[in-house]
Image 1: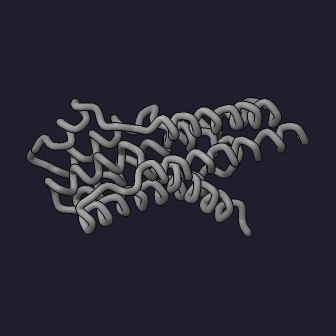
Image 2: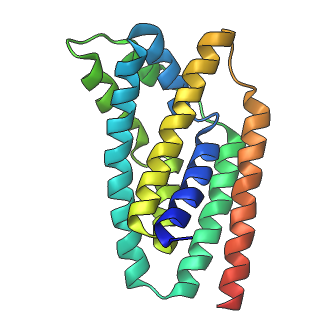
Amino acid sequence: MSSVVSAFLISFAFIFVAELGDKSQLMALTFATRFPIRVVLAGITTATAVVHAVSVGIGAAVGAALPTRPIKVVAAVAFVIFALWTLRGDRLTDEERERAREGSRSAFWVVTVVFFLAELGDKTMLATITLATEHGILGTWLGSTVGMVLADTLAIVVGRRLGARLPERAIRIGAALLFFAFALWMFVEAASA
């Protein structure tokens, strides 16, 4: 399997699971109640592509500048932090909820800007940086972007069909377990490097 495909699959799976139960899904669902779904998804895709392009650039620069063992240890610690962050849960603030409801001349730009700002410093951005230190730039960028957009699409579709929220607690626990598993994997790789 090529390194691009491998990076894509790892990043896709990781970010898709990390995004489940994230505030971005709540924002996506809120936007989809006000604007056409195709416009919401176009805005989410644009914002995600830009944020994750910056993320993989940062991750690649860090990966090139530091030796492998410290990167793996830092990545493992980061995954533990992401797991704990995921278990804590993520809620929309009143300000974020209000921004998601505000109208504008262009729904696309409202969604894009709000998602872009919400994702800066979010766990999926930090996870993408971490993944890019170990994997290729293109595969990580594509995988993380597609994973996040599909997770947000899932929230919109399931939320609209069921009229209820996803089983948030079970999703948080599953995502946290995945983060812990990645942390363990990184610690093992660091020990053997």
